[in-house]
Image (cartoon, rainbow, N blue to C red; front, side):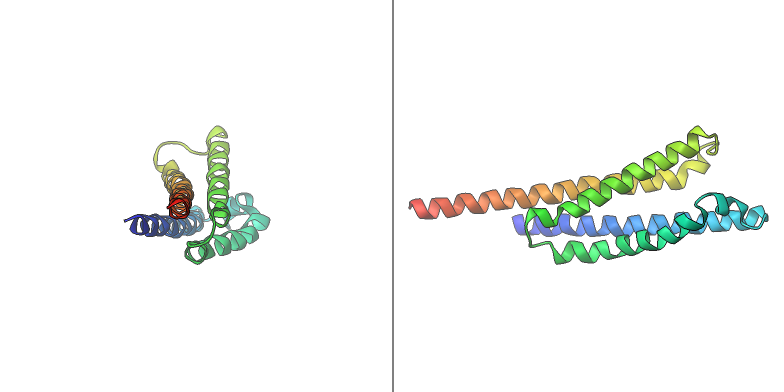
Length: 156
C-alpha cells in the first residue's frame, strides 16, 4: 500500500509540473493574442515581459518541461533529490504572486477576468508546492519505517 501511495504522489508532482508548464505557455500565448487585438505593434509585450524576460522564458519553459522527467528519475532516491521540486515550485509560486501583485497594485488588473490566468497559475503552483512537500514527507516516512524494521530484525 505504501508503494502505491508513493507512486501516486510522485505522479501528482509530475502532473503538477506539466500543468504549470501548460498554464505558463497559455499565459504567454494569451499575452501575444491580446497584444494582436490591441493592434499597436505589440507595445504591451515590449514593456511586459520585455525582450530580456522573453528570452528568460525559454529557460523557464525548459526547466519546467524537464521537471516531470526529473521527478520520475529521482523518485527512488533520497529526500535531498526531491527538494529541488519543492524549492523550484515555491520560487515559481512566490515570483508569480509578486508579479501578479505588482500588476494589480499598478491598476493593471481591473476586474476578475483580467486576473483569471494569474489565479490559475497561483492555484497550480500552490498545488505543486503542497504535492512536493507531501512527496518529501511520504519518502521520509517510508525511510523511517524501513529503518525501524531493520532495527527490529537485528534485535530479533
